[in-house]
Length: 309
Image 1 (cartoon, rainbow, N blue to C red):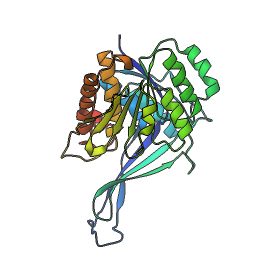
Image 2 (tube, rainbow, N blue to C red; image 1 turned 45 degrees about the vertical axis):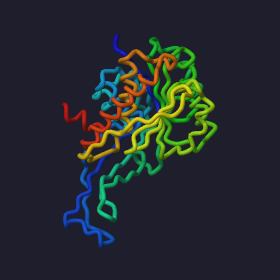
Image 3 (tube, rainbow, N blue to C red; image 1 turned 135 degrees about the vertical axis):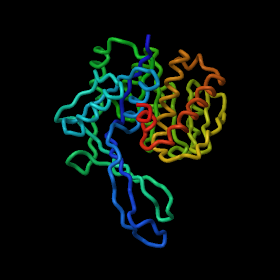
């Protein structure tokens, strides 16, 4: 039977632009004339990417989302279907929330490639998102007529966190990916409700909190320095990076890393942290590093998928 993963959190419409400089780029000038050309517009953000990358890796996904009925909100749902996600738990209605992320590939003042980000919502400069509420979790669990192999979430909101707690109690592998720990109490509650916590070493620099949770797998990404992992309090181990001299866009590398980790654990039938060995984890992370490295050769987070279509 095909493995399946339930997921909720940050799902948005990525609007990706490539900035071009028709008169060339002069680092001595404060401003170089440019034209921003639309490259692609498609579902993205962390959860959105994971839910659409996993089907490419052979894992069924069930995203949970409530978007508005704008053109952009409807496109998010359409794109989820296009990439193979099951949209049974996705809906569009006027009171939903749709986030737009404008990503602009451009050059900085020194002529180096960088990416600028700007968040909005349709017809508003304020970002509107709508997550599963805590009081909706019991009803959602009642209609959930299958047991997922894993649950992914990337927000600290009460609803996704409560669902994580309930699913973990049912023996479902829970994978949490925070974008930081500014709200420490909520962050720690999410950690407690999880089995695997993957975070950026740039966003979370103090890892002392991990000492309090000897029953989990922590994964710390370090960019071009690779990754570190700590399995059930056995100490931090390093996984070497896989360099790619043909890098053009690193924006989706972290999401590919997560997607491959989940897919490989499902493939190995290792969705119980107690079953994992250091060797298992190292093998999974090395595979993830290899595929994530390959992904940066393509423009856009799912450019590697586009290349195969």
